[in-house]
Image 1: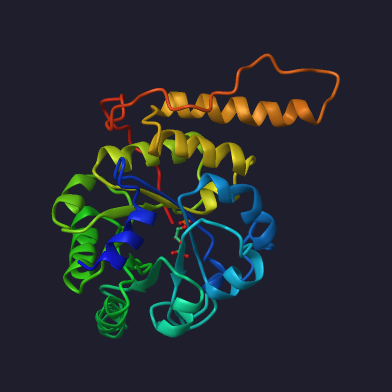
Image 2 (image 1 turned 90 degrees about the horizontal axis):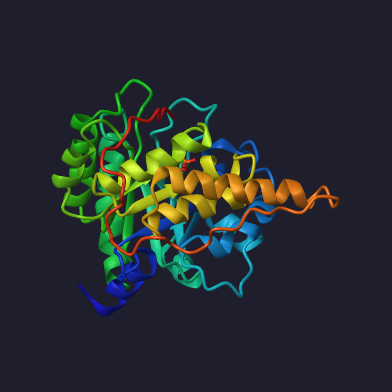
Length: 299
Ligand code: R5P
């Protein structure tokens, strides 16, 4: 693997603990103005310093991210369908490698739709994208998108992740599922877990915890952060698990503390006595909670 590619990968998956916290804000590429992401600039600004990388489209990057940022960009380069169109799986590569380089992308992201009508097209496109990206030392993240009719179980997700890795993807994004460790074990490249539809904060923290416990390097989370009642508190709680090895309870307490502080700030007559827990409590790479609890994760 070339130096440049390794260097870019290390911007996304932190070498000190092999973990990654990506903030996903690319939803508009097929959903348009997604709820609570109507104004990406406002959403991104307070969250940027808490993520390791930002997953987004070139349009949002150019219009809504300060050029002064040091946060690595994972640029979505696929598209071509919409939520009201005929088939979401009919995607093509829409961004040239030159434009990705102009945007200083640290990685390129695209979806493959295994088991769908346009499976062939998207898998071939992944191979072609890897060919081009490798020329310039840019890693490719493959998103294993799931058609409505397909189940998100370990058998299907293992198939999709393995196919992505076999085509040369350097990171694969997928969903958490029962027997998730089997998905991880049969995929030779790092796996990152998508957050999925908004669920209660504690469940999203459980999902984060379970994903890491199951062998993922981290999460690429969107809606469960910026659709939260308090997005900053939520991303900091997720970070507490990903980089601080916190348990779900510890992370949820941090979320509550930060959320309550915000509430107190809006009522100047009261001052919070709750300490803000900002530092990771554990140094081990293994989360301390032993048994992952099940979590609802339906897209
Ligand atoms: C799909 O639109 C994108 O690939 C998202 O980046 C991905 O689904 C992660 O976002 P969320 O946590 O909202 O599922």
